[in-house]
Image (tube, rainbow, N blue to C red; front, side):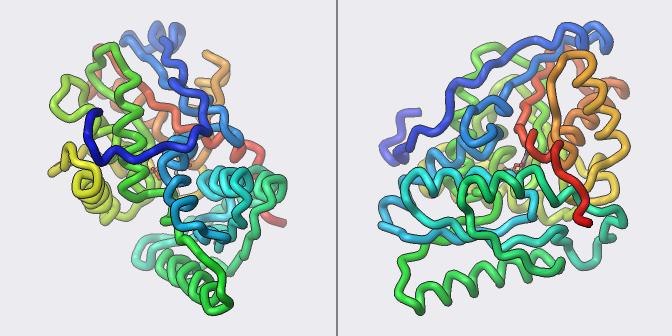
Length: 322
Ligand SMILES: Cc1ncc(COP(=O)(O)O)c(C=O)c1O
């Protein structure tokens, strides 16, 4: 990308991540399946968020912040990696978290999230200040983060607020650049989507190519579709480049809801672990893999397929809170 507005990056990850064929899955399914290993980004347990943080961190440094405030679920992979990134630059990271944030009007999952252990343990390791509040709507979570930032400012602290999941123009930009790591051509690319910037960046990056990008939503909320487009517009306004007007985002693999495992996801995770020795997380990547498997079975996608593994592996060690 040769845009003059190109943001600077703070190196955190080991890039490019590997991209390789899945020989046994390809044989089983009768299509050519490859995997992009963003579970191996190498920073603070790996995963897609390291890429976004490389672009976000210079903003924190530029504002001379002493504190970063964010929010998410208790088992958020973004909180884990943001906390680690902040500790590297000597900035305190405070995160407002709920075990299971939800959207009013959508059914709340009846099975407990795997909120204890996993990422929660790593947050302690990285020195992140966690404020856990009772479960409630997403809007309450966002408001509490804003309130916390305001309170800290009242006390004279220089605060930077970081959007949930690192989904901002910077996050999209990071994934537009990530798309450039793929030199082979694929018919389809499948990736998990939640706060939207990973999908937005990849769909922008592959826009106009022969690769059709499919997002598998980890959340039931239909509004997330608009977020993916809004994020692409914000990225184009800040840094130039593609502005998406549509995106392929599938909702049928969410299972019981955001933040909890689905039956199909659990089976997909067992399958990939046992056939290729690759670990998926229950909340995001396992549902995306299960979605891809279903789309292949229904012959909706075929040919050469790239699964973009977004990481989240620490969640495998999560347990329901007792
Ligand atoms: C492991 C994993 N995969 C996928 C996603 C979705 O990425 P995004 O929030 O950019 O849509 C997340 C976000 O929380 C994640 O942690």
